[in-house]
Amino acid sequence: MDTSLLIIFLILTLIAEILGTVGGFGSSVFFVPIAGFFVDFHSVLGITVMLHMISNVSKIALFRKAIDKKMLLKIGLPSLIFVLIGSFLTSKFDSSFLQFLLSMFLIIMSLFFLAMKSAEVRPTTGNAILGGSISGLIAGLLGTGGAVRGLTMAAYNLEKEVFVATSAMIDFFTDAGRTAVYAGQGYIHQHDLYLIPYLIVAALLGTWIGKKLLKQMHQAQFRTIVLSFILVIGVVSLIQYLMSSSSYLTLHEL
Image (cartoon, rainbow, N blue to C red; front, side):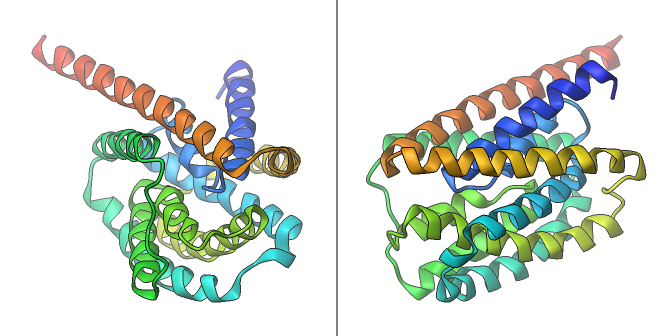
């Protein structure tokens, strides 16, 4: 990645980290489709998990006193089990097809929650386990499952700080699990490791800025803002996929 592209990449990474902290969904819901503009999808998974590990450690450090241990067990344990399953499944699909699935997931999910502002999940143990399982599976397969986990956790009307802290701790364990699988499948490349110092700075700075913004925003405000950004990213990612698919078909028709 040349210098100009690296600068753009890092600026977008910082923005993803800020939005992920403010929204409580985690930075990957923004970072995965953004990184897809720079590298192939399997490489995105490897880079994302490195950023996420750093990001979650910084969030845990800043919000550690607010972690809800019961929620951690109900949602975190099934998330860990199913993120391993999803991670193994990535090797069964073409990376461009996974990008298409991600863009459709982001668009459908954001439109649903923007249209159904009162949509909520009943705060039952069964729903918590189901939500954790689905979010873990999607996180392993597509690199981001925070939105589903966010909907599940929202049913418990947690304070913003508790929401962010608990979500980050769940992410930490699931990321540790999928890191091992991604590494075994060759998604974490040695030539990408130079990005780690930059990702550390982006994660720490983005989390700090996000924490400051979080205190200034109402619950409904940050939910709407974050979902709007997710919708835009999903649409752009879908356009990117369609354009690349069109170019591929045209090339093979010549």
